Length: 164
Image (cartoon, rainbow, N blue to C red):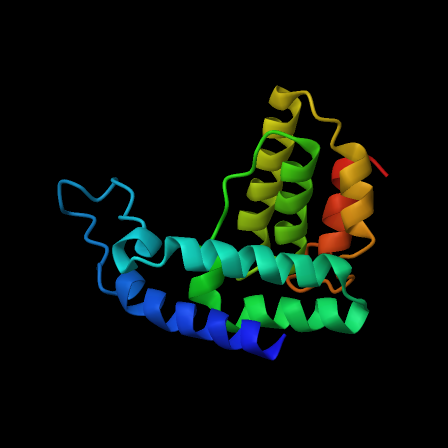
């Protein structure tokens, strides 16, 4: 896992200047436009996606100590966490991956953003006709019980979304 962490650190370091070099100017005519994709701009989209798939695989198959270490990777490498996402296929496996990624991020910098993300996952699963409840329960078992921001734990978010 150490080489994977080094790869993520490298990707994070490449993404940071791309992300931070575009100041937000709310007086400009294009301030509401989304910023350019930092992965595409840096030319590392495929490598970043491969690293994300690999770290989520480690998270899913690892024991609690491994999952905690993966959560730490997402906490430490915030530009990687922010910029690297994979558009899930509207399948059970696609939504499992998305929920595992949600779990590994473990609320990121703001639980409110992640709750909105969970709502989007639920909305898309419903549109795709995927029963999300079993996946929510499955991923909740792998998730952290830490209440990082006084709003509940990631595990509790998932259990609540499952109606458990």
